[in-house]
Each structure stands twice: as C-alpha cells, then as structure tokens.
Image 1 (cartoon, rainbow, N blue to C red):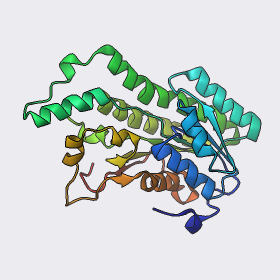
Image 2: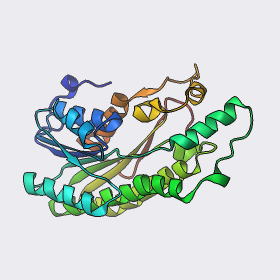
Image 3: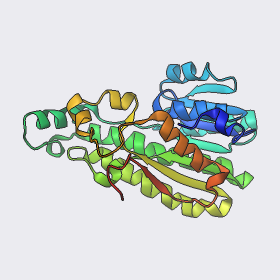
Image 4: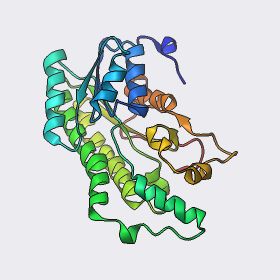
Length: 267
C-alpha cells in the first residue's frame, strides 16, 4: 500500500468523483484521493448510507445516491458536480456487482466433484442484472464523464474491470462477459477521447479482499490460495494502481488494461 503521506499533494486541487465508493475498492480510492490533496471528492453509490459513512471520514467529501443502471441519475450526479465545483478532473468507476447465487452453485459443484452447470439454467433476470450494472453502468458513467471533461480539454478516467475477462471462470459466463465488455468499451472510448485530452484506462484486479469477496463461498476462496502467487490483494493495493493511472505519472498510458492479479496468470 502507498500511504497518503508518501505522495501528498499528487491530486492537490483536483475535483474527483468515485462510483461504488461506499465500500471496497471505491472507498479505498476515495480515501486516497482525499489523503493526496483532492479539494473535492464526490462518493457515488447506490448504497448512499455506505458512501456517507466513508465521506464522514474525509473533510472534502460528499456522498450522493447514484444507481449506475439509471443513465439520467448518472448524468444528473455528474452535472451537479460541475455546478458545485466547475469541473471534474478525475473519475474512478468502481461500481459493479457479482452473482452470489452462481458462485454458490459453482462451489457446490466443486464440493460434490461434478462439473458446474450454470449456463443452462441461468435466467434472463440474472444475466440482465449483471450486464445492466457492470456494462450498461460503465457506458453511462463513461459517457457522462466524457461530456463533463471535453469542454476543459483534460481529465482522467479509470475503470475497475476484472481478471475474469481473461480467465473466464467456469460457471460465471455473465460476469466474465460483462467485464470483457467493460474492457473493450473503455479501450474504444480511450482511443476516441485522447484527442480531447481525456485519458481512459482500466485496472483488472484478481482476487481482492472486498465485500464481494467476503460473500464468496470458502471452497472457492480456497481455490485461490496458491503459495506460488500473492494472496488476495487489499482494496488499498488496487486503489494505488487506479490512482497511478489517474495521475500525471501515467500521462502516456491510454487504453491500458493493467492486470493486477498477483501473478495468477498473464494476459
């Protein structure tokens, strides 16, 4: 973990917005932005109580309720930041969902030593829920951020993807597909908007200690325990990577997808 004191002032005077900021990686990003000098940090989350609890720790932070599935809500939240602060310099998009039911079925198959059988019984509602938050939500956030940043001719957007887009876990097709779409969407947008001075990059974490990970059945968590690689990342370690991408030190990174999985595989 890189502590704020080590890079104090890296985001001095910046206006930042973080989605999914009520917990996990989003909360860690928000805390680090505040520690590194951001003059305003807007914490957006569908769980506004969680975002408010994090914001209370930070003198320059404000929590807002945003469901990223709702394009109008995303647009309104971004416009409110512009009205209050005049610009958005950094946006980190960490909002996302997994599918605990699918995870449980994969775990049961492992325990019973049988193939996981998820796709044949995956209903439309489960598919749409994951796609609506992870992929549609990313589109809504990217579009709103680009609209906000283009007049200023500058800005940094960092999207939290997933290593699941590369290793496509058995029994988890909807999540893997959503994150692969997130990566491709972000890279396509990155190539377009760099002409407007906006950089878009992606962090693709592997197993990370978050609330999402806490809901993972133990048998699946045990499967990630390999002495040849690093253990689960902390949310703060992933936040460090995200904020490197958002910083001036990463000025030449555009459309990058940084695989942060502790050495489990390379892409």
